[in-house]
Amino acid sequence: MNKEVCEKFENLWDKFPDKLDSSNNYQFQTENFLDGYCGSNSCDTDFEKINGGCLYLFNKIFGTSELFKSVANSNINIVEYIMIWLTYMLNLKNQVGNKTNPIFFYETTINNDKYKNSIPDVTEYKNYKDLIDKKKYFLDMDKKIISNFYEAFKLLCEMYNEFDDKTSYCSKSSEKANKFVKKYDELNKDHSITGNNSYNQLLSTLSKDYDNFKNKYNNTQCSKSSPLPTIEKTKISAQKTVQISEDTSSSSSITTRLFTVLSIFGAIAFFLGISYKYSLFGFRKRFQKQKLREKIKNIKKRINH
Image (cartoon, rainbow, N blue to C red):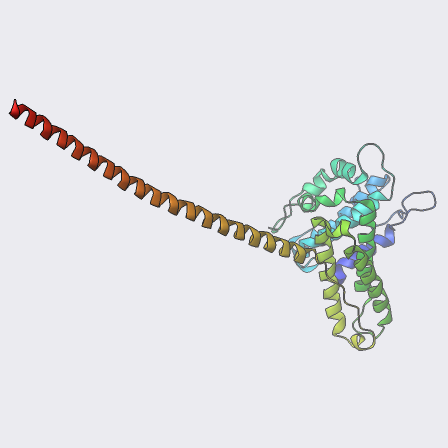
């Protein structure tokens, strides 16, 4: 994330606020730049408004190889923020029918040509739909959890937009940072979140982008007067690593013991085989001697007769 990306979201929030009005309708300003992203140059229905905002973000961040390199800094994870916005906005309205609003929107809107048009000179993705499909799990996320992630994301974006390294107004950034860290900690301590790989990925993206902002902030005089708080990173990865290590160690121990037991049985079988071989050889030798004695007796009998 960077200020350029957050400015795109700020432009969107200005023309298409993320709150419903008193009549439970989207507060979409008429005759604004988003109309150009609608088929009739006028976003009339709810889905057309959402679609206009979504296409605007993709066009301004991933629309060309130059934008992908300059605005997105070749970072596909920014799609996660677009998906947070998209899912959050769709969930503001009540579900109609058996399918959730995000799933219904995907099936009816994302499959059109504007999302499928190829983007030349980019190897990381084919088109907007390909980017969305890489993060499609957002469409199934819990509404309440998405709302909390959206709140954290918006605070982070406001920090990027409001910070100016040429001024000494630090209190606003510090205030937003404290709110962000508090919200992040709430998410990080929620076991229903830290136990989910998709949510963990989003936590990781948020923490990295906060650290990037903090590094930029620390290079100014603000860090002396209003230092920013440090977030506690998610521990789920470490726990999984330890668990995997323990499982591997346990498996290795079991394998070692099993190998030892099999080796012992193998050795016993080997020696029993040798013993059997020699005992069998001795039996054959005795049998041959007995046969020889019988032949000698028969010869003597014939001579005597």
